[in-house]
Image (cartoon, rainbow, N blue to C red; front, side, top):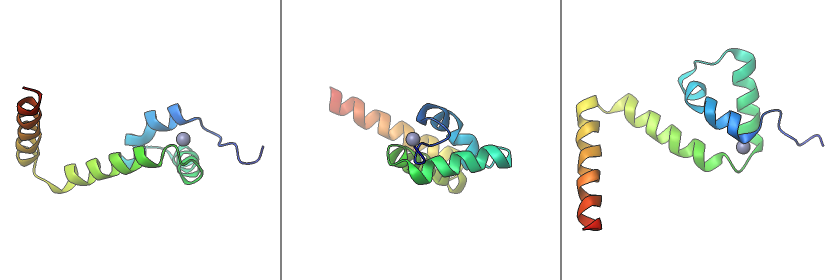
Length: 80
Ligand SMILES: [Zn+2]
């Protein structure tokens, strides 16, 4: 019973952006952090969000928009 995380995965995923942004208060942040360190189910989700946040932080906004647009065009081409 000691391994049961104090938060369920859904709550953690909902708070993940705030967690990565540092917007949570310390107690909440710590609860999320503990869940993430114990839960393998959330690991891939965290990886994705972290990569995304890093990109948003380092890439200028219009470059990102261009990348998103290009991906959208490419997937449309593949779909057609
Ligand atoms: Zn989880």
